[in-house]
Length: 303
Image 1 (cartoon, rainbow, N blue to C red):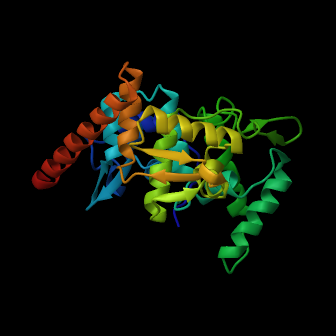
Image 2: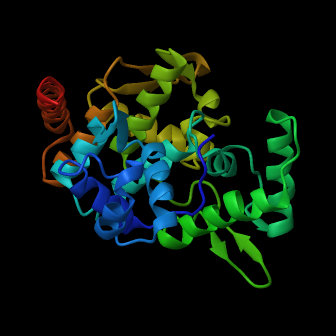
Image 3: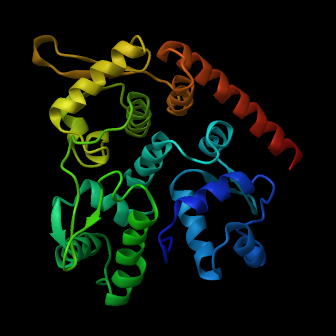
């Protein structure tokens, strides 16, 4: 199991996106001092930066080196400073989905039911979840150092906390988060999550209510029933049913999902920001992914 000894800050991921193509040895054990200088962090935080970047889906290990994933390449191409909120919705989704190695982050968005709570409630729920999957109970040290502290640090060090409304400290060790349906990602980012979920579930269609269950986009993006329905209608209309669409015929509320690379929607998101129509942005997104695939094949050939 990956150890998240610290949370992460936005600046760490920005620097990884920018620097790792020229420094594929950045996270090798022999390069700790180099990583400290490049990422501007202490020795113990270097390992945390790596595991969070891997969990966020922006880097991966290739042989003995670390390289950008296709998502990482898209960010580097369109928004290397990671200024726009859209990509942070993507990072949030990747950290919160079912196969995330940041299991405590994922638990918080899928299984934790409270929007107003204190540390004791969060600890009780996290320990109960841990006990379902481990023979030995969680130690106090594990909870304090490897779960609670990193989770708080992520929310404090990124816009995912107060700005996105996912976590806000109150008085006397109490916390809250905004209600479901209050803040939602752009349609293209919702489309990314839906396509990714459908691929992992091997689904081409799904009942709308299924998408509100734990580990689905409704839970992860914090939809209510109405906002999810409206967003899916918008996706169907904007992309001319090339991504997904919802049918209310005979009260079925069935969502049809196309077999499209989810990353196409992230590229489309950036092209839409540049003024392209959704359908044109989708075509440019497909072209982006083909270019990145060719580039990665060349990198592999000469590595």
